Picture 1 (cartoon, helix red, strand yellow):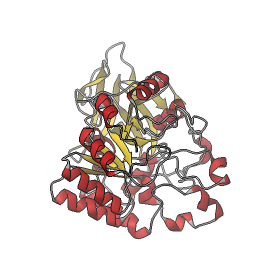
Picture 2 (spheres, helix red, strand yellow):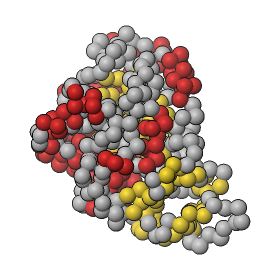
Picture 3 (cartoon, one colour):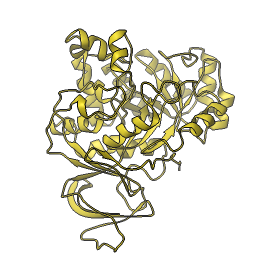
Picture 4 (tube, helix red, strand yellow):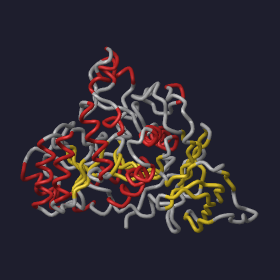
Length: 404
């Protein structure tokens, strides 16, 4: 595939180039590359071309909860949103806390995704560190819940936490408030990389800032909803009081601003969506935590670029380059020769509103309905194959990621 007239950022400088992809990899980035007879040509028309987005935090609900989302619909939402790699969380049914369950889940989901994917393993309250040892090279990270979760996945026993930290490659945590501080202490004590999911408060940003000053290998993630939404949105009406509920809960405008500042100054490393779909009927019937997000995450972050909250260069770092680098995901996150041909063509001049009608997620709602997007995904390319363009999907080509 040859993608012509791509506007890219090269060390912060805008350039118009062509990108040639052969055998799934980028082989040449240059001006005016000649096509061969059998080469598929896509014209980017001088729109921005970004590396495919890498989302380290999704709940695709498959298996066990596939009425809310399944691997195929969730991956379609990814493709439509410019996400070419996602990592699925372990709290499906059954929870992914043994090697056998992980292997079974991988087999069930093979051949069902439009985009590439990886898995997190779950830490269990019953201390499954012996299982963690078996899968450490087969997963992105071990995820533990220190505040809230379902079933056996809330880990409160300190010995279990210690053993999980000791035996994991990298530990990803759901931690809030003081538990963020505690997770950092465990990481320091056991000299283990720590990935803090979905920071939501100014206090948590400050904990991470101090940890980084100390030289600890601590990474932090923020979701678009914790950047753009707050408690005033939740309390807008009775419907929003049900829909805009998630864990961690949306906080204050002051927290929004602290999170943006943490994103700008390097305290926060990645954008993860925490795509956690529930059907709108479920959300409105009883208090249910979690929101769909992967379909609109890039559009919302481009809105942040337009509002001068973040530069486009920084957006590429936190949505593409850093997630792949932190989790040592091979050949993802950069527009460079040798990397996978994962590209997203975006029209940053599109200022239409995000609407419910065009959604592909089974949840069939978005927390950003009616918001003016910062740009629109035109085409998504996975390893040199077009998988989404102009509201059409092309071929299930996703496969499991590999590691450096």
